[in-house]
Image 1 (cartoon, helix red, strand yellow):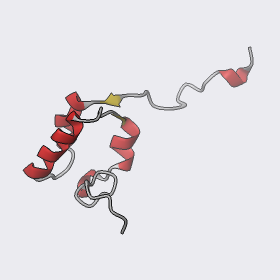
Image 2 (tube, helix red, strand yellow):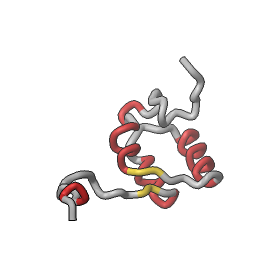
Image 3 (cartoon, one colour):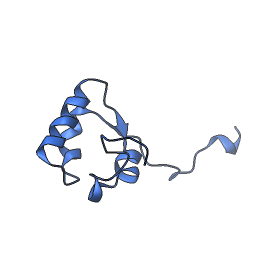
Length: 78
């Protein structure tokens, strides 16, 4: 067997999918007004909500979630 087929022990973090059942814990990460929380709950019920830890931990700026373009419901170009 080629050594190129073996992954390094710490090659990448384990995949974890976040789904609507994780929404309560996700919404605790940032300062969202109750109206925005309600909108996110409604949106997660319509299309299948599924994301991964990279998006949740690295791409969304939870400390400024209201101005974060990835998490914002207003996706118009600047």
